[in-house]
Length: 213
Image (cartoon, rainbow, N blue to C red; front, side, top):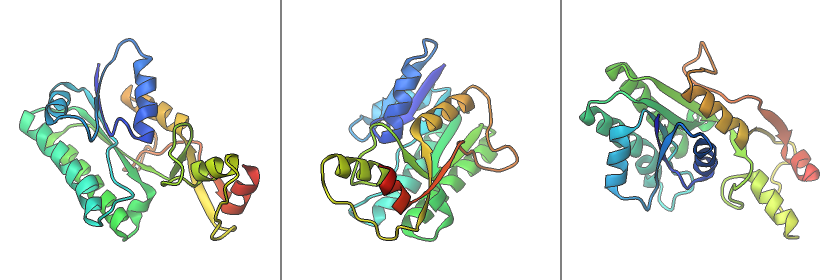
């Protein structure tokens, strides 16, 4: 089986790549910002499964939300159509897609693009709406409060808790990767809903998270 992973150098991508390369029956292509357009074209031309993990969540310009989330997804779908292929397309989205902020809107439009692609072409698709993901190789002081708390506390740096009672929903990266592989092999979590979800999820307040770490 041939696998393409976009956003291969990101937090989720790196963990997925390691797990995929442990399996001897897979050929894995990686695509990220420093890859050539030819790398993406080759992967789209041959992949049986595409994990589209590339995206933007901390841009310098608001327009980058649309460019990195919505437009990049549309470009992937358009390229697959042009190639006349029907690979299994898996999209990494966010629970924030229900919100009307610029990030949430860009992720929701990406979801709609993938669902429309599946309906129009008959290609199988899966869309994951992730809450906060934590675990190894997560970048601190970026978009993970768990990684930030771990890093700052380990380095005797202060942490900021805006609201100790605020509850977070979290999933562990190894559970994310395991679910990706299950989906790749034909299992479908979240039956009866348009979205796929990872289990288990964990709920913790910011105050309890800081105390635990």
